[in-house]
Length: 256
Image (cartoon, rainbow, N blue to C red):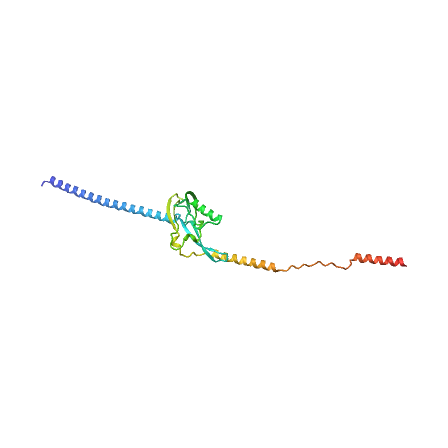
């Protein structure tokens, strides 16, 4: 083997080694690139999850539900159940542009006997017509509409009325949310409605005030009227006594 052939062989081996090193470097770089892409994807997914979590913590939550309350009597006791439809926001931020659509108009089982009752049901159905927009709803100011008394629960196991309400609304950033609520009174037919203790206390106080008023009126009705006649003095004043003295002196003078 000549010297030229030897160096040519060495050069060829060097070229092969360099090619192998380049291939290994490419493989390592490719692996690192794939790991970087996967890491970026995980980071992006983590950021999305954190963003969704932050939205879930701060977004509004509009809820349509029943509120069952016992009717409070004048003396603070309970009589029957009052059924309200409540629209509230359970979230931390206000809800905007709320629209609600009910599958059929709300209607009480009992015949409304007061104008305020009829107006309440009319306002509820107007709010639920799918066209009326409520501009804003905060967590501190829910809407409450009186629907019916205990007759809405029915008797025995007969079917009770139910409604489905679809609600759409937005948050402050314009994100849109949609929920549906199925309002069914039948599961609460035999449950117990608990009265608000503050309302009951107010009724007790009102009853005591009425009792005191009645007692006061009874006492006033039994009082006798006593008329005191004015007294006039029969004694003569100084001027009249002086005039009599002058008259006596004149009579004496004329006699003498």
